[in-house]
Length: 127
Image (tube, rainbow, N blue to C red; front, side, top):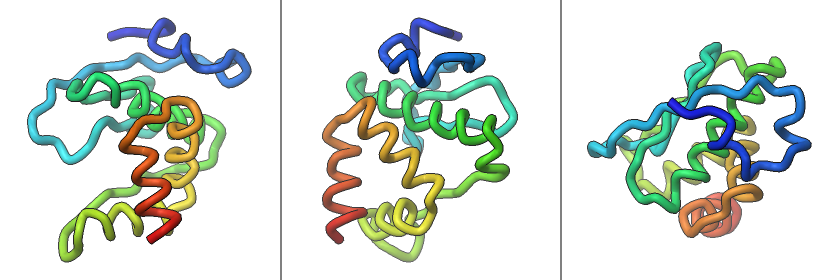
C-alpha cells in the first residue's frame, strides 16, 4: 500500500484537508476495469497494466473517493458491454451517469492520456 506520494502530482487545492486513501495495486489479469473505489472504504485499487494509465485510474477513483466523502454518491455504477459494442457501452456509461462523467472529466484534466481522451472526445461527446 502507498499513501501520499501517489497523490503528490495532484494540485494541493484538491488535497487540502483530505484524508488520503491507500492505493492497493492489483496485478493485470484480464480485468475489465483499471481500478475501483469501494464506497466507504479508505482504499483505491488500481490495476498494474500499462504504466501510463495508472495515474488516470488513480485520478478517476480518487474523484469517486472525494464524491463519496462529500455525500455526492452512495452507490456505484457497473460497467457492462453485454448486448452492445464496447464503444456504445462506454458512451452509455459516461453519458448517462453524471457521477462517472464527472470522474472522467477529473481524470482527463489531471491525468490525460490516449484512453481517456478517446473515451471523452470520440465515444462520449462525438458519438
